[in-house]
Image 1 (tube, rainbow, N blue to C red):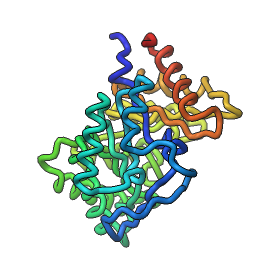
Image 2: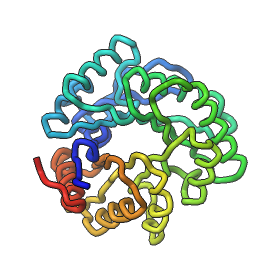
Image 3: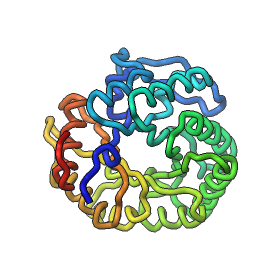
Image 4: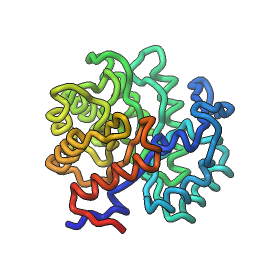
Length: 281
């Protein structure tokens, strides 16, 4: 099957965090959006204008980090949804970037807070909402608590079109067995966003191979050093995903000082296109 870039290439707002500059760090005690901070310097592009910018680079799928949203007001969300539609860009995922469902001290509070953001994802027309499963050291109690939180969030989102996914991230999901255990406990209500960059070490590729058959979306992060991409690592990650039967989009994650953000994204995109037999244009 030909490689369809419009369906299989996406970009995250995190990959353009220097372009966006400001963030709104989360306060899990409230649904209010905090005031902007110039976390990465002044803004060079507003979030409302980001869909048009990525479309100008011929990318048509976008993931947005929740801390990049300056407002949850319905009027603003309607404007952002209209901006996406006008640019011909699909909102692939709202990345809900806080919460710990595996911590007994915060699980109930964070499940309610995350549920509110799932509602934002639905209002924006997002295909997916990515939820952090938990950050505690893995144990049966922590996994049970995380699964309970995810299942409660899923129940609250019954009837929504947005799909819930979690990610192989933090200690709680630090091995393939833990990922499968948690997903099994949600009985199909929560899917998987596989991430190339969250696991490291000599067993990384075998571990990714064991989970990518369950992934519907993924974060395709390449390592850069001195502006040069580690093509051997990136290529092996893509090969592992494809061999596991992965057929979803590759969300390009760039997080290095050099080269520039759009240049780094272009290198990742070109590499994946070439690896999978696609053509430019």
